[in-house]
Amino acid sequence: MTHKVTKAVFPVAGLGTRFLPATKSIPKEILTLVDRPLIQYAIDEARAAGITEFVFVTSRGKSALEDYFDHAPELETALREKKKDELLKVLDATNMESGAIAYVRQHQALGLGHAVWCARHLIGDEPFAVILPDDVITGEESCLKQMVDAYAEVGGNMVAAMEVPASKASAYGILDVQPSVSRCLPVHGMVEKPAPGTAPSNLAIIGRYILTPQVLRNLDSQQRGAGGEIQLTDAIAKEIETSDNVHGYRFSGQRFDCGSKAGYLQATVAFALSRPDLRDELESFLQELVATRQAAQ
Ligand code: UTP
Image 1 (cartoon, rainbow, N blue to C red):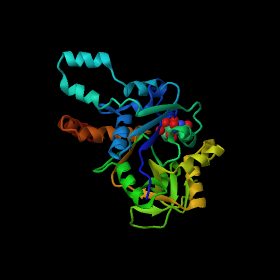
Image 2 (cartoon, protein in one colour):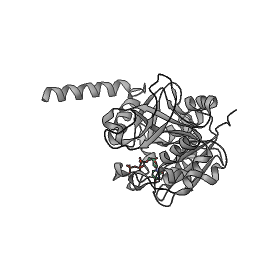
Image 3 (tube, rainbow, N blue to C red):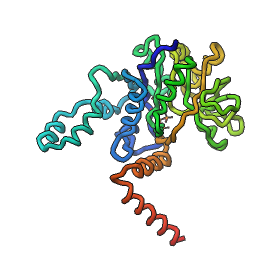
Image 4 (cartoon, rainbow, N blue to C red):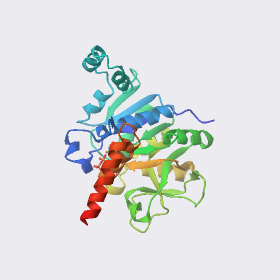
């Protein structure tokens, strides 16, 4: 029997250089898709998967994230006085139960593996999830919930996986797997950002993981990998060698890379078009825009 996954780590200590100058003073995870920050989508996904303890790995300049999950007494009082009950409900969804959320600092951005390792004392000796909030995934069932269900069957370590074009493989961690139609695939190897033409498959690792505490112990060595960073992929790859217990999970759903400008803009349009209060106006605006551009060509 596998241990229930109740803890999730949210590494949010990266520099967010692709969104400068916005990220000079705003954490990337506070950027909004329509009217909800990226981090809210990540928290909702975790809750839907049964997570009850949330560990944020933060860095200097990320206090907006801590404030976001706190109560806002002045705002709440003002809304109550104005009888804005709907807005009060919206705010309520952002408040976390006292003690459910913990923050640890990564003092230097040494890489994703290092960020996850910073949470080791709060994780202890149990399996845990990792969610990268800039990967936003939509679908009928939350990606992490799909993984938690599959994990209950196979245990070990699990990474979310998605097919990517060969030309993009060198931007991802890539899995070495046998071709299969199955959603859950045994992984024989993994390589972070392979040189062009050397990727072992077209299945890329996306920012959702379920990991054993052994991965945290593997990170103790602080070994640098691709790009001179301490890579989470390397610490998971060690588990393939020693325990052969890593699975890739081909989730059902659409993933937006909100760490990149193009992905963030695509997500903004897709999320707005899925909102009944915005759809019609935005759709006619986009149609007009496209028609005007085509006429000008
Ligand atoms: P990215 O590779 O997207 O890096 O990190 P970044 O710094 O956020 O953004 P760019 O590339 O400079 O624009 C993937 C995830 O890992 C976290 C990030 O916060 C993001 O959630 N991370 C990365 C850390 O927490 N610490 C690190 O040292 C590196």
